[in-house]
Amino acid sequence: MALNDFGPPLDVARIKKDFPILDRVVHGKRLVYLDSASSAQKPLPVLDAMQRYYETTHANVHRGVYQIAQEATELYEGARAKVAAFIGAAAPAEVVFTKNATEAVNLVAYTWGRANLGTTDAMVTSEIEHHANFVPWLQLHQEKGTELRFLPLGEDGTLDLDQLDQLLDGAKLLAVTAASNVLGTLPPVRLLADAAHAAGALVLVDGAQYVPHLPTDVREMGADFVAFTGHKMLGPTGIGALWGRRELLESMPPFLTGGEMIRDVRLDGFTTNDVPWKFEAGTPPIAEAVGLGAAVDYLNGLGMSAVRAHEQALTAYAMRALKERYGDDISIHGPPPGSERAGIVSFAYKDVHAHDLSQVLDQAGVCVRAGHHCAKPLMRRLGVTATARASFSVYNDEADVDVLVDAIGQADALFG
Amino acid sequence: MPGLEDLYREIILDHYRNPRNRGELESPPALRAEGFNPLCGDEVVIYLAMGGDVITDLKIAGQGCSISQSSASMMSAAVKGKTLAQARSTIRAFRAMMSLHGQALDGHGDGASGGGGTGAVGPEEDERTGAEVAAAEGVSLGDLEALQGVVKFPVRIKCATLSWHTLAQALDEAEKGAGPD
Image 1 (tube, each protein chain N blue to C red):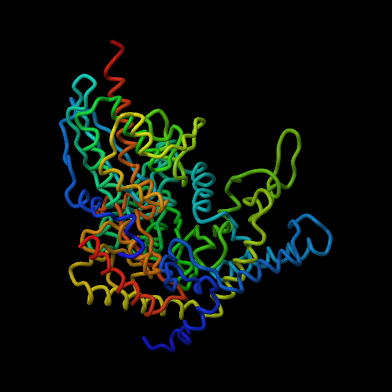
Image 2: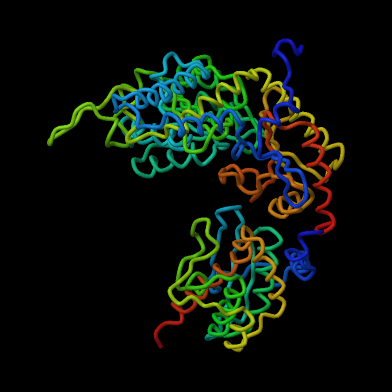
C-alpha cells in the first residue's frame, strides 16, 4: 500500500519532543519506553490541558450556574464529543465515561448481563481475553450459571473460528477483544459481530488495545458495546469509556448509584438520569476527561491511519530484527507481522525467564512488561507462565527497537 | 553485569541452574502446598514429607524466575532434615533479611497474596537483621545470605519470598496434621 493512502508518515523525532518523560535517563541510559500496551506516555498538550483546566476552570460539572462551572461542564462534555467522534459513535450520549476499560466491561456485565443472562443462557468469549474481559463473565457464570463458551486460540496465534457458528448457537452475548494484549492478534471483529448478530447475540468488544492504535469506527465494527481506556491512548489514568448503542444503554438498569445519575429521588424510590449520565454516578474525573479530549486531538493531528501504518511497520521491523539477530534463540508469540497484528511483540529469549530478561533490559534503559499480562488462561494455553512483551506507540522508532535488540543479548552474561 | 551484581550473585545463579531438591513426592502421604505470584505468574509447589516433627524430605516443583527458583532451592537445602520449629526459625531469619517484619512470613498470616507492598508490617516490628535473628534462633542462613541483595530491588522481593510463603502454608498443614497428641 502506498504511503499516501495513510497521509503523511509520522515524524517520530518531532513527536518524541512532545513527551517530556522520554528525556529521562535511567541507569545512565536514555529511556526507551516499550510498554505502551500497559500504559502510554503523555504528550505536553495533554499535560497542559489538565494543568490549565485546574488553573483556570475547575468546578464541579452539571451543577453550578456560575461561569466557571458552566465552562467546566462544557469542557467535560466537549471531551465526550471528541471521544465520540474519534470512534465513530452516532452521538456523544453513547459514550459513558468510566474509570477504565475494566470498569466499562463490568458495567455491561453488572447491568445488561445480570438483566439478560440467566441460568439457561449462554455466552461466548475467547481464550485470548485479558482478565478484564473474562473475569466479569466468569463471575456471572458462577453467580447465575450462565454457560461460558470459548473461541479457541488457533495454532497460528489467531482465533480458531471453525466452530464459530456452533459456539454462537443459542448464545446471547459475544465478548471478544479487538486486539490481544499478549499476542497482538487482531481478530476479525466485523466477521465475528455479523455471525453473532445472525445468531441473535449482542457483541461486546474489548477495544483497550485497539482504539489507541487503529482507526476505529464502532458502527463499522458491528459492535453493540466497545470498552476502552484513556491511559493507553496518551491520555491520563482514571478515565476510560464504554460506548454502547443508545437504545441498549437506555434499556439497561443503572450501575453505580448516587449523585449525578439521578433524575428524581423520593424517600421510596428514584428515577434515573438520561444516558450517558445515568451511568456516571458521583463527581466524574473532569480533568482526566479534559486530558483525554486533548489526547484525542493529538492523535487526530497525527492521523490514526498514519499511526497504524507507523506501528505496523515498526512491529514488522522489530520482529525481523529480533529474528535476524537471535534466530532460534528468540521465540515470538502470535501471528506474523502484517494487517492482522497490532504493535505488540511477546517473546522469549533462550530459557531466560521474562522477569530476569526484563531486569537486564532495565539496565539498558529499556522498559518492557514481563509477566502473565493479566491473561492467565491464555498463558496456560501457550504453556508458559510469563513472557516479555515489547509494545509500541507513536513515539517509538527503529532506534528504540535497536536498543532493545542489542540489550537482549546482554542476558547471556548472566544466564548464558 | 554492572548494576545487577547485588541481585544476581554467582551462588544464586548456581542454584538457579542446578536447583536442589527439584521434583515431586507422592501426595498423600506427602503434604502439598502451592503458591502463586500474582504479579508475574510464577508458581511454586512444595511437597513435604514429615517424620514426627522432622521434615524428612522436601521437593520443589513449579516455574519461575532465577530469584524465585534459587530462593526455593536454597530454602529446601536449609530446612530439609530440620524440625518444624527450626524451619519456622529459618523463615523468621529469612523474613528479617528481606526486611519483612511482622507476621507476613511466619505461616500465621497471609502476606502472600497481598497487594503491591513488599510485606506486611505487624504489631511487633522487628528491626533485627537476618543474621541477628538466625543467631538468636540458633539456625544458619548459609547460602541464603546471597539473597540479601534482592532487598535493593523491591519488585523482586516477592520473587524471593514466594516459596517461603508456600513453605509456611505447608508447615501450617503439617502442624494441623500432627494433631493434638
